[in-house]
Image 1 (cartoon, rainbow, N blue to C red):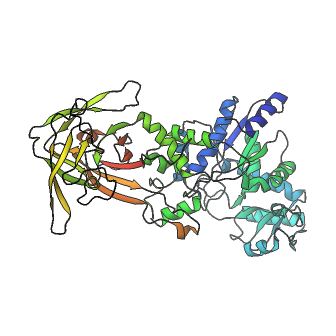
Image 2 (tube, rainbow, N blue to C red):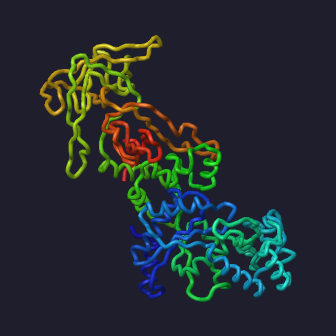
Image 3 (cartoon, rainbow, N blue to C red):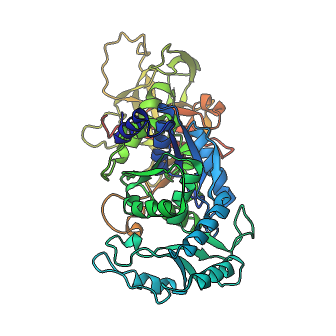
Length: 534
């Protein structure tokens, strides 16, 4: 589906304004990428691919306090996992150019060194309805600012003691144009540049220069940067000669019950409220990958939600739909019992094999054999001594069909001293084998099961969203029930599952074997119930 950005690019190419499209995806390496970044990745790389251009992966690594090589590696892995293999650039490689641009601004009387503290700068900046106050150092002599800026560069100034500000307009209705800070002192080693620099550029100064250096034609940002565009253009007007990029804005992705802030995600990791950035509950691409999402499902989701100019919220069910729709066609079927209850079939004394369909939606459906003996396991919730109304599963003296097997009738059950059912006794109804049933017996319920003699023990992890529905602060909405672990039984077929291999567990949902754990640990990707209609 084409967007307003497609129209802009087609017009620019047709008019000769640009001869080749160059876009960029510019993450800061201060955390792992999340599903919101996937939208930007798919948009920028997708536009470049459609119009014969190039999309750069550029690390906006201008803040050594928050950036790490671990994040660089994870971002490269995520982008390649989504199917893109871009040229890689680093903003830190342009620090010399940015420094020269800053010196150029000082010499032109368009930047000055200031000693205001962060709090003083905030107060002097003004509000959305009131203009700011000029610094007493706004008209500092050029030579003095040059000397002080050199001291900042050479490590002679403490962190926060001095900043370099542009001289634009403290009365501007756009608060971003009120003499913004473009350099600050950080006596902190850089993850790539080491101890070479003691000063680092601010994002609004660095970003347009990075784009210009790389020859970016269409700099595509989210809507919160719309008010920063005048500053983006001011920097280029005063620092750059030659072809210039232009900034365009689109609506960022917001999904219900989903944390879309790297700051909050990092807080969860640091506080060990989740098991790392790739915890399957996390909306990071690493977490979604471990959860069992595929690149194609994420791309499909990003294509379906489209690109707009107005912010809106997407229902989380739409993301679930993207992977459920795919897995319904591709995932092999298997049986696993998450909360096992023993069931003994008194008249099934010999082990037999039955036919089981691997995937009914496959282009060429295949079958495999499963074993069926006297002792099996069923889900505990599939038997009730005192069933509620409209309960269609097994009850005392009731009948139910075992999936791909027989109709069975309950003839008894055993309980412990607390009244908990420990065993169900039943018998198969002869002549009711699936595919051969001519008995005419009708039952309302069909339940899955696992043969006890050759089953394997598994751990299943059932995930929910980290945020509860509704309004409130992050702390108020954070869910403490986002992970339920169960220990169950599965047919032996699942004992040979490969890591990251995905299945439909009949009646329980879609699961993937965990890619990190060595045991038979299966993460639920998504349930079977579809809460979204395309």
